[in-house]
Image 1 (tube, helix red, strand yellow):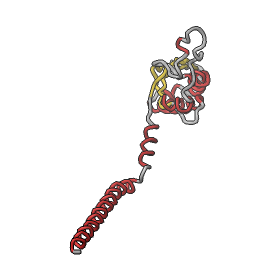
Image 2 (cartoon, rainbow, N blue to C red):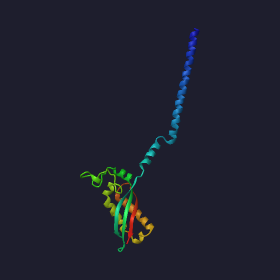
Image 3 (spheres, one colour):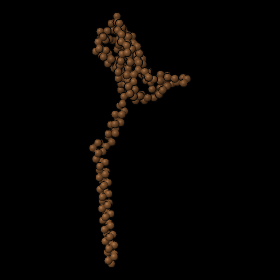
Image 4 (cartoon, rainbow, N blue to C red):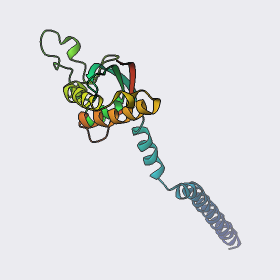
Amino acid sequence: MSAKKEEAAEGGEAKPKSKKKLIFIVVGLVVLIAGAGVPMFLMGGGKEAEVVEEEHEEVKRLESAELGVFVVNLSETSAFLKTKIMIEYDAALVEKQTGGLEGGADGGKGHGGGAGGGGGVPKPGGMPPHFLKRESQMKDAVIRVLSSKRADDLLTVEGKERLKDELLEGINEAVGLEEPPVVGVFFAEFIIQ
């Protein structure tokens, strides 16, 4: 009988050792999960990833285009203004608002498509397709703003800056998008006579 008691005693000791191992493993897992969970909780969980995505979406891709040369009579009958206007716009914003699916000026119709196709991407120095569709409205807005000015208003630096602000507002309104894509107006030529 003493052999059975020894085996029982050995088997009895084996069970508490396995329970201790199990307890250490469970405590270790809890500590590991808590170690990973606390920083996630403190940083707000998955919200940080959403913020990073929003910031990434708002990356600007600035491009420029020539709006043209304008010769207008100023509000005084004896003076006129000749100016060449360049605009700077956020191409990413235009694509986002128009879906980036618009074709070129002729939509790539005809033989081979030529410069008309391109999936909405303007050639360097050119305007995006949506702007080409609204070009008449944009030029009309420029002419209205320019012809409302007097020569004295445009001779100072402050006067030119005010003119740029008014042109920017008028062009963005003429483009007709929800968010204004044009961010800058520049004079490549400016002559008052």
